[in-house]
Every structure is written in structure tokens, then in C-alpha cells.
Length: 177
Image (cartoon, rainbow, N blue to C red; front, side):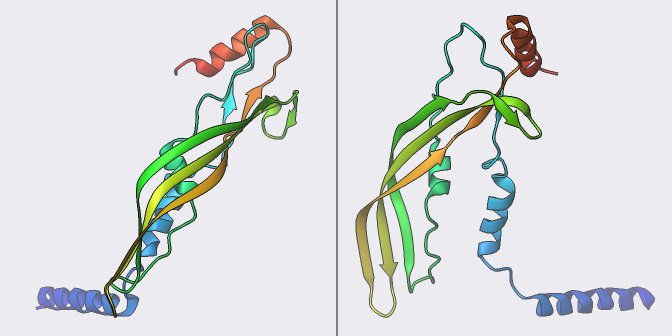
């Protein structure tokens, strides 16, 4: 008798819980993904020191398509069948604007380092489709262009002009533990 009462109590509690909490909003999953999956987007990487006599490093790592798409303005969250907006047929153009290295200076929590500026201008060509089924069916497809600026700045440690120290720090930073 107590076992069946316990099962009934759990069922009633589960029913009340679902009735009082409501549904999860559709944008919650998108917001959680932005918060947890891309947490390193705004962190500055720390690179090994620039060795004397070696050529200066260049900004060769252009922004990826994912980084460019995440930096685009958000789409309008429409109402199904009333107003919906889609983007498709993407083409990307990347242009390096700035590639320079600042002189060494002190950075808090890092120490002496050199800031390497890597600024990119990215153009995204795509088709924007606006669709509605109610009250009158509408289907509009327009070519669009969005230009976004992406900074991929990073720090190079600065340990001084001693070549042995530079080599030791480079080996220490690149070895696998």
C-alpha cells in the first residue's frame, strides 16, 4: 500500500512540476551554445617568444568560416509560417588589413610580451530568403553582402635578447607533457 502511494506521489509531483514550469524557450539552447562552446573567442593567445635573427612571424591564420559566421549580426527570430528568414549559398572573402608587432611592454598576469596585431576584413556574400505563408504566401530571395572586422591579436612572450633563453622558453612552451 505504501509502495503504490509513493508511485502516485511521484506521478503527482512530476505532473505538478511540468504544469508549473512551462516550456523551455527556443532561444535558450542557442544562448547556452554561445556561452559554453565559444568561451575562448575573446581570450588572447600567448605564443612563444620571437627569436632574434629569425624572420618575424606573419598573420597567416585567416579567420575560419565558423568565426566569420559567428561574428555576423544575428538573424531575426521569426514566427513559423508568419515570418521566417534564412541565409544560404555563402561565399567568403578575407583581406588582411594590419600585421604588425609592437615593442615589448609589461602586461598584467603575463609579464613582458609583444602584442602582435592581426586585423582582418571579411566579406560574406550570401542569399537572404524571407518566407511567409500567412496571410498571403510570400517568397523573397535577395543577394546580400555583410562586411565584418575580426581581430586575431595575440601575445609573444619577451625574454630578452639572449638566444639561449629564447630557445629554452620556446622548448618549454612547445613540449608535450
